Length: 90
Image (cartoon, rainbow, N blue to C red):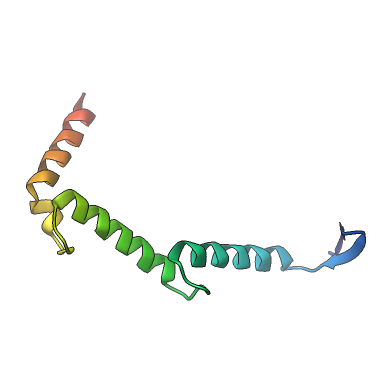
C-alpha cells in the first residue's frame, strides 16, 4: 500500500518499511548522542548502560573501581537492601 504525504508542498510516496527505517535511524542517533559517539555501533548502548550502572555501584560502595560481587558484601549495600526489605514488609 502506498500513501501520499505532503512535505514542503511536494508529494512524496511512502514505501513499505519507511517508518521502520526512520525509527531505526532515530534510535541509533539517540544512542550515539547518549554515548557521546559520532555514529552508533552495535553494543554501544549496552556498554554505556553497563558503565553507568558500575559508576552508581561505586558511588554506593565507596570504591574507585567496580568489583563483581562486592555490592552484596558492601556494608552500605546491606543497609540499603535491609531497608528496602523492611519497607516492603510494611
